[in-house]
Length: 219
Image 1 (cartoon, rainbow, N blue to C red):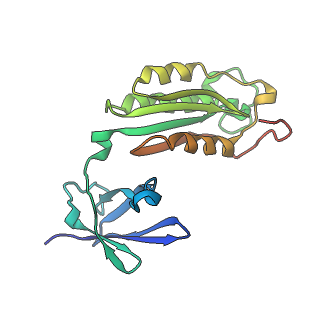
Image 2: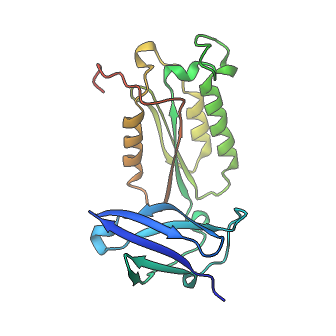
Image 3: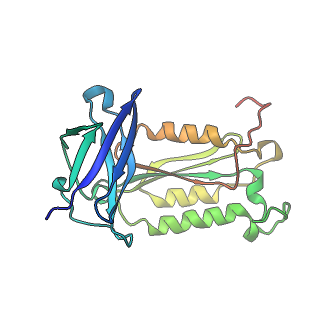
């Protein structure tokens, strides 16, 4: 018996909304929607994964395991590929908050310490270093952005992890007038930057707080 999964599409004002339900106790997760060809040929790419009730990935699924609906009409699945993450790699953009509060301790009570071990930015850098060590696929590409009131540094997407590690070490404490957090604008620019890349795209944000821009200065 072939286990079937339902993927339902709903178009509202050219915005793509997805609703899905897994058969039995399995879970279907849609991790990315690529609608860059929607206006050209009315096609949409959906990246998804299926896990069992224990959270383990279900492998070796085929196109026949899925049923696609647009509203109440069944649609044809035009193509189906497995192992996209491995076969094509992932575009991973790391966005690190380099505002003044990232140089406080975790509780926010110690704000002027010279002890780098307690700084929030140190923990963020350590997390990035650990992630770089876990990336084994040579097709994966990584980029890096650090920001406060502006984009401090930017490493374009690369397969060379050493470039990311070098840029990470070059992130320094900002001056007071640059110590604010232009979070929303940075995320907007990060998303805009990734538009040029095809395939799987991921943004990982490492930040300690909310949008706190220096509004009186143009940037």
